[in-house]
Image (tube, rainbow, N blue to C red):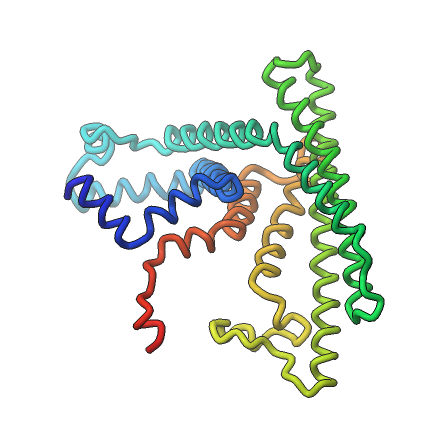
Length: 305
């Protein structure tokens, strides 16, 4: 199969442009890198577990008895590493490199944060409708968003200075770097906690909406025909919140222990858990976009059937 044929096949299916669009978008590139980086860390630490290494040794012995081959020698002839330690070390290096790249890319994040802060300030100058039944929830979200803006505006410079000091670009002592990393992580943790509070506010808003619809004689359940049957098992106050609410919940529940871990000197969890939680948050963030990009477009005729 030639390269030209492969490219034409991908272009015809519409997948190539979608994939390129995802990789060229900073909003999707960062969580994609995060998934690869944290996933590599998780697999790296998994391979270093004594139980896994013992399992591999037993599997090689059994495979050698069945095939009559020396598995280690066969791997060497193929140019492959039979020792998982080397694979784990390579994945660990890859994870560290991706982490460094992501922090480097965030050096310019303060510009976007300032722009976000200005747009939020302008939005909050607009008066709310006092007759709106959801006004108290809108007020709560405004306060939460304002606090998130300030936490991020303080977080990003601290991380930038710590990163530049780590690479000897700025004259920052090791003790000062450690303090900057810890305090920036605490501000990130504050953002995560505020985001979880916002999700609770959205639940309250959802309950209010259901109450209004019930009084009006309308249905209070979601009308999404694509919703899985498991939504029927949810309590009413969680129905109709939307896919983005659930994605945000997974992302922030994963980042809550991570930010707590990074906020405490010495941490509270090992790298295996860090890798799992980080990969889970990244998958929830961008996994659905990759699934959509790699899924073939359904012809209009089939959609109408």
